[in-house]
Amino acid sequence: MYLLGAHIHQQNSQAALVIIKKRLKEVKHHYTIETARKIDKGGCRQVIIDFYHNRRYFTRKRVFSQDRRPKKDVSARPAIVIVAGPGERLLIDDLRQKDIPVEAIILEANNKAAGCDAAVRPGLGRNFAVSETELMQTLVSLNQKLRLVVERNTENDDLLSRLEQTLAGMEKQQKIPADDREALILAAAGPVWFRENVRFRQVYRTSATSVRQYK
Image 1 (cartoon, helix red, strand yellow):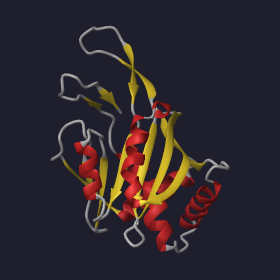
Image 2 (tube, one colour; image 1 turned 135 degrees about the vertical axis):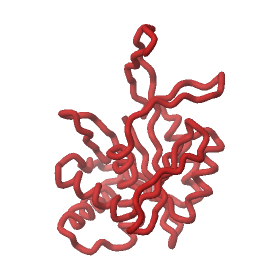
Image 3 (tube, helix red, strand yellow; image 1 turned 90 degrees about the horizontal axis):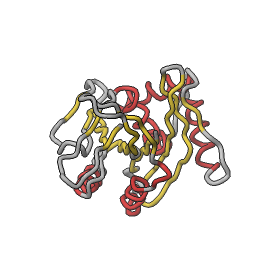
Image 4 (cartoon, helix red, strand yellow; image 1 turned 90 degrees about the vertical axis):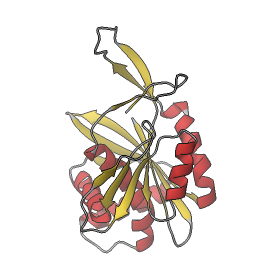
């Protein structure tokens, strides 16, 4: 399964995007960060839409019926997780209006517990209130357990190297530059927190012309 994490840096209006591949190994999720990008805020919406429809990031899942129908394989689209500060709520609403499901992690004060806002049309994602501290703790824990790795490639090696160094610094409890923490790191933390904490569920779209989606 593929996941796309996104976060918009409020000061410079740049969007950080991270593509993560998830696989199961010994009944645990393992994550590989394959791509890290920074683009202008204005281009973020179209990049997310193109990613969602890109068949390269589709995966096949076997579905078993509860009413004795034959099992079948279905295509599962990637999951989009946006870590949202004040500027991203409009982007989330806009994508959902275009029938692009978005799992939204709404940053809350550190003393607030994670929660879920169900006031979203079924099939278009959910809103979760999560503290930045919890996101970072999840990221560091997975990195320490070697369940989160950064794949190095020549296409965007500089950003991936920077992300890898930042993860290493967090593990050693070093001070992380604000630009790293608020952009690439938050973009990476959102999808892994979501997958580690939100249970698998089947999503049925209500439209007669829509296709069932599975996560």
